[in-house]
Length: 135
Image (cartoon, rainbow, N blue to C red; front, side):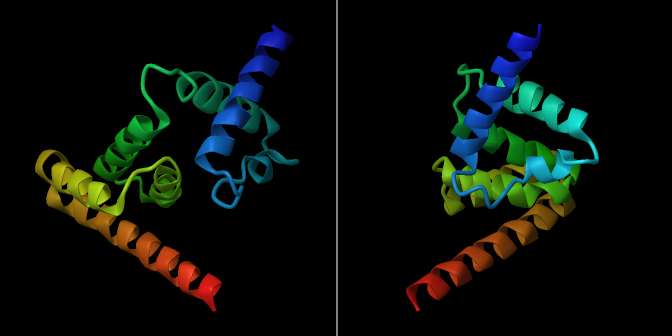
């Protein structure tokens, strides 16, 4: 069983590197170090190493679904990270806006508008970072 766990964790790290190539978005190690190492292991093996590693949906499709779910559920605490990861797998800003319009129809305007505010902040921050890199 330990080998399977190690394989799933390795698959999880591989998926995480694709979603967050710079390592600037998600710090699972910080979550697990000295506080909750079992949560780190479970997250890597299950969320990233099993569910997200399943190739029936692409990472791009999974991030679109994740953004819709987080927005609809009002889980804005994780939305910013997933917006950034979605950009890393090719989801365009206009697709995010269209997705949040779709969320508004099915999950309500307050949920969609709250998520839109997060998306705008992420977009503005990204533009600011690009400008700083050019200077």
